Image (cartoon, helix red, strand yellow):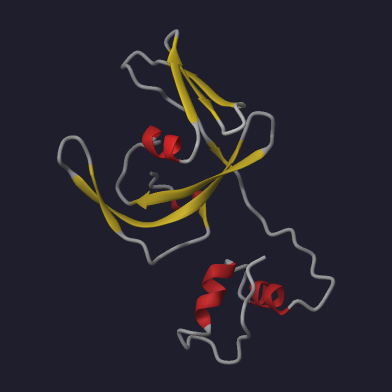
Length: 155
């Protein structure tokens, strides 16, 4: 969960929910999106279904959701280690003074680097609409928001 809308890509405005915290306070989550982060080795990684929550002061990472997605957590020697499905360590963070794990995640700046060399209408519409994501492009025709748009294929 994050309040940084600028970190997120692939908008899914159809999903709305309320998030309840341990102190019974609730905040509204507007939608779920993907967040692209830059790892220390300069490679990028996608965290999917990140909730955009207006008014959150800190970002939260759900260990339960990570476990459901096939990640493995090991807590030992005052540290949290997170491994992916191939048993590769993707994160190791020490326990802080207030008994939480503070993770500094760097969001990656995403740019569309596709060079259109063939006539692919889906990519042309993507470019014409200022790099609008393909799921949103698919909705423009059926919702009668744009006349003449073909069936969009998600690459």
